[in-house]
Length: 159
Image 1: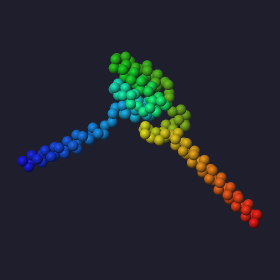
Image 2: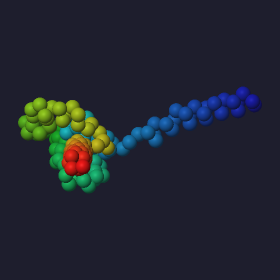
Image 3: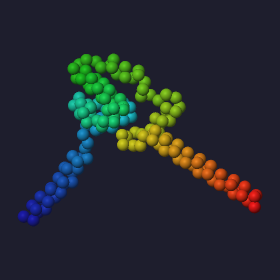
Image 4: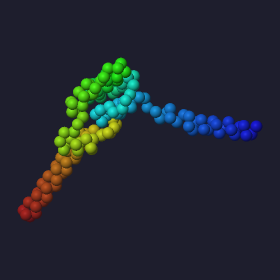
């Protein structure tokens, strides 16, 4: 009887340890599609329902201010064509020719290397503006210190 209880307890512990962990950690496929898109292109192969769900559940700012809806529509069309047997190579070639995913020049390459690779990272324009603000504050403080030192020199000469 005691060995049976130990066996049941061990089986329950193994089930809890290995059986439930992956279900909580998995994210929905539409979120995976959006994470994949964030570098400017969708590299993975997802089901048509994942693309539809990504279109439906995408954040409003991505829908309004990015090419996410167009890219998801294009990927959905390619997936639908491939499922129906029609070759989607022409659309893929068109997507590759538009060139908006390629870095242009040295600045573009640097921004691509330094740029965010996840949807929840800080955008580069925000970092640039923050740096510029700090630079302007430092310049203003330097001007103020210079002005006070000059005023002290003039005052000491007058005395």
